[in-house]
Length: 358
Ligand SMILES: NC(=O)c1ccc[n+]([C@@H]2O[C@H](COP(=O)([O-])OP(=O)(O)OC[C@H]3O[C@@H](n4cnc5c(N)ncnc54)[C@H](OP(=O)(O)O)[C@@H]3O)[C@@H](O)[C@H]2O)c1
Image 1 (cartoon, rainbow, N blue to C red):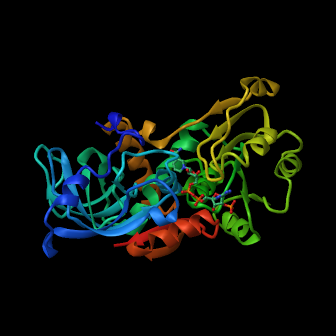
Image 2: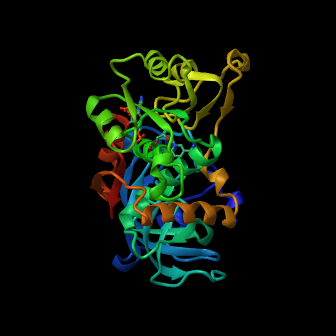
């Protein structure tokens, strides 16, 4: 069940050790990005490995599109440790080439997106419960761009802080992968594109004017250049001194204080990431200054049962099919260039989603 598959407990390389020692032939090997020890970009190793085979309750997917996420850098550095060695990656999309015993809901040839790990590879073995069929009208690249970042954004605005009409919402890194989707979702809270006028007021922060423009094009009503402007001061001006109803903060360490200063009385702080480093421990009495609610969600806890996962994926796919959500692909890198891709992401040179092509 998904319940047991938290970010930390997923073992992306179930087949790894047997692979290392197995005799390889051309037909049984594949390329993958492997981490054998935690560290910097040089720990992303592009290597030959045996193709995985389907085991009980798993499927093997031939990946056509592989997602890059900030969390990958935490797995590489050991901030979120996975058992070593492991194949890097969270989400990828492709076609099922093998179905394991006990799997009844998939067949060979099905187009799926999966979030069970081991994504940075030509083939991934994934638990069947971590895969979902992709509607015909959605491409592999869109499905990959939508999966982890789209579901994160959706669960943030629906549950972590249920955004209401006319709320003021602060979105940090608004031109990033999750950020651009938050801008779009914040603008239209309804499930349907025609309800687009029913939205909140999104205030997006980003480090360059070009990123601010992109956030605006995706639904941010106001933007703040975090390199040149005082975030809390600008938020106060925009909101008539009241502050925002909620801050959706995936940047972490460097923005926690400006988020707290920007939130209105009875507002909500949603801290959901560590792009600039983890938020240091806080004294909870700081919440009392404005009766602030503090939430620290992680996506996989919203996908703990197949029913929950289906509910969120159904909503996400419906939004895409209606044209209510667009995905900005920064660049598609070759699988072998994963180091460059993660380097660009960490250097804040990217916008939207980064993909790898096997
Ligand atoms: N809780 C969950 O379940 C969950 C799920 C998915 C993602 N997340 C989190 O959401 C956040 C966004 O993820 P993403 O994959 O969409 O990444 P992203 O937003 O595309 O990239 C990170 C962005 O953070 C900003 N940033 C600020 N300080 C930074 C620093 N010191 N180093 C690097 N970036 C910095 C940069 O934007 P500017 O240059 O505009 O500042 C950068 O582009 C991450 O913290 C990630 O861990 C959490």
